[in-house]
Image 1 (cartoon, rainbow, N blue to C red):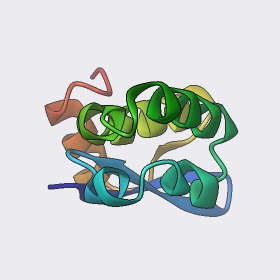
Image 2 (cartoon, rainbow, N blue to C red):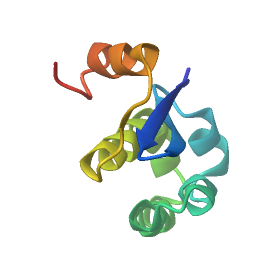
Image 3 (cartoon, rainbow, N blue to C red):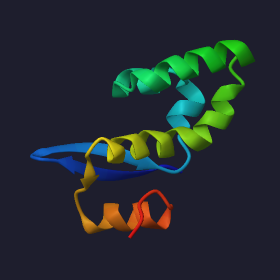
Image 4 (cartoon, rainbow, N blue to C red):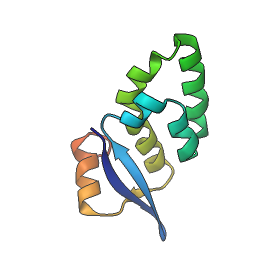
Length: 95
């Protein structure tokens, strides 16, 4: 099950997620579309087409980690202690 965390960049706060993505499992490429994650939108469309949608099962386990990692690489950082600890526990953020 996905856990929602808060990421901050300046005065902006954005939701990040860790864990299994039920939304990706059921809705596939619509998840990166609504999050504005264009790279993963293209990847999911290609993988979904090539595998007749079976890739969504695998991507449901991976997508939240990839999405949150990319946010961290782009300058976002945990907005609170809960978010920081969750990222450290999931191995996404180093101490």
